[in-house]
Length: 445
Image (cartoon, rainbow, N blue to C red; front, side, top):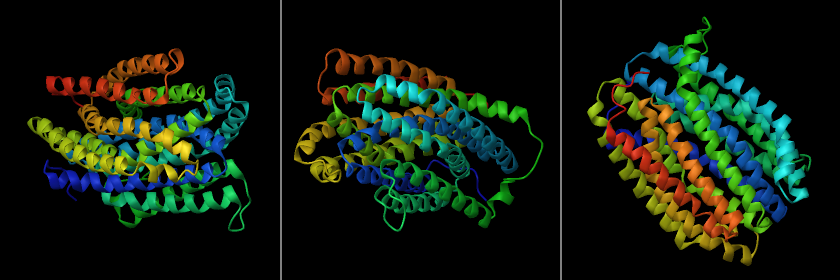
């Protein structure tokens, strides 16, 4: 099995496109959730925006663990050390379960207090809290599920990603329709039906990918699931590598939750429109995130081979593809924005107010296609503390902008979504300057 990568366009596409497909399926799944919930009413669609971003905070903590572990696995793949990859994966799974337990405890202790304090509409606040206390139990399943991302991407086995995500999406769509509306002989639960559906779907995706890994014999090649001594030095390495990313991603999404809370102060309609914009980000941004993930893995793998001089040319190749694909997606989105907004069944006024926001978001998507690649290149070098510094500075600038625009000056949400321009310009500038400086060369992980 070839673990060492090259920097050709074919290799880049071979890694990124399966990741794109794997990301596309859950985004379709998420959008389907919102379409089903939107038919219950505008407040339900608004509540879905807050609950979705809250769960996303913990989901991206899992992504922080995933990306840190992925960089480590990719470095060992570049060094051609398959058994070390298995040891990293096994210890990473235990770390993820411990973090998931903390997430559940935090939600039960603090989420009801925080949501009732910051959400003005009491009905939305109660709906949000009830949903979150159910949905958070999917966290251990989700974290174990994303660990396989680190393994499959880090070992260049991305073609297997789609099986778990496809099964998860099919189960979720089926149960969403059944549990929200009471079809297929299932109980009619309403808004909370989406929470139960998502938990069961995450469990099914995890089960499928487990069988795929075993049926392909990957567990034998890399020593996965083998019982061995618990090595605290490996736990320490994973935490050192992943902790800055966990904090980075958490504060990023917390700032987005802050944004949604400020939008809620403008009314349920603005919150509902903003929730649809998050759907657009999710669906339209999958290629950017896929190429970013490939950047993390490929940069680390190339550095593991000692080919430092190939890193910046590799990044430029990835950006060329990422930006070109995003440009096509954004063009289509701007030609038919009414078509996308009509899926949420909120009427003509909703569509009219939503179109200007789509124009703003479209430019931000192009910025993201470049900025997120440069940021993940920093991750691939192993300098994750630099990632955290970049994110922290960016979030301060972003939060000041959103407060002034939405809360202090009370400008329309089109101005509020301009915060994405501020975010990606700031992030790109710092990541680009760091990678161009060459200070990452010689980093050992």
